[in-house]
Amino acid sequence: MLELQDLSVAYGHRVALQGISLTVGAGEIVTLVGGNGAGKSTTLKTISGLLRPRSGQIVFEGQRIDALAPHQILALGLAHVPEGRLLFKDMSVWEHLELGALRAPEQGAPFEQTLEWVLGLFPILKERRDQKAGTLSGGQQQMLAIARGLMSRPRLLMLDEPSLGLAPIVVDTLADIIVQLNAGGMAVLLVEQRVDLALRISQRAYVLETGRIVMQGASQEVMQDPAIKSAYLGL
Ligand SMILES: Nc1ncnc2c1ncn2[C@@H]1O[C@H](COP(=O)(O)OP(=O)(O)OP(=O)(O)O)[C@@H](O)[C@H]1O
Ligand SMILES: [Mg+2]
Image 1 (cartoon, rainbow, N blue to C red):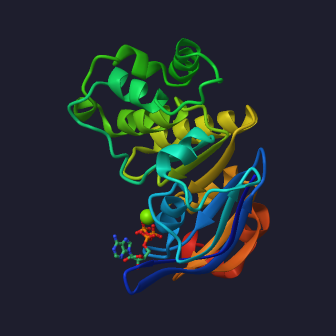
Image 2 (image 1 turned 90 degrees about the vertical axis):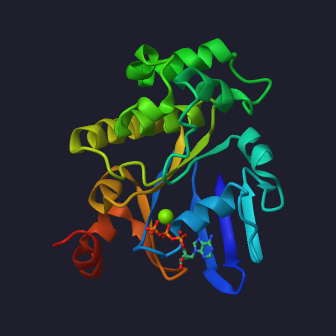
């Protein structure tokens, strides 16, 4: 459903991705593992149209998207929940969800139905609907960032470090929700500093080092790799 072919991306003269190729199949959870500065966020930003590749192609459901604007890519069914959440602290939960729905496909489910589905996944947001995002806890903010992304009814959801800074119990809740979304048919491209968790809930993994993919395979196998164990799993 998503295919990156030999993608290179640079910030000015600084090369961040050097010819990476990866795929996400329909119904898969795929995780992108890598240390600080490896290029994980750059990959997601390039897919969602926030950065332009220097070379290579991005194909989503048979269509090239690497020259499209972010709102066009979102409207095709590919949503990005960015690192750091990027909420508007003075805007309410409700306003964020309305914003998230702006790029929902016109022929898709009605707003009310999507809202009910999203609030069913995150009941706490229903209770907090009039509260400003800046007054929510870290976990609630992450839930809102994901909920906003879901309001566009994506078929592929990209998550950048959803567990960052959150308490273990909240991390478990988010992991359950990712698995639940996937069970409902949504494909997921996950970047997650809790590599153990990411490998556990994903089917396949790619390992990125300084802008290159150095390993790929079934998550079960990647998890057993000695270099991965010592670099990312603390074993
Ligand atoms: N706006 C920018 N301008 C210049 N260089 C950047 C910019 N953003 C990222 N980089 C560089 O590009 C490389 C990849 O960064 P990226 O943010 O994609 O890494 P990451 O794998 O997401 O890391 P982290 O785990 O720290 O989030 C790094 O060398 C980083 O310093
Ligand atoms: Mg990052």
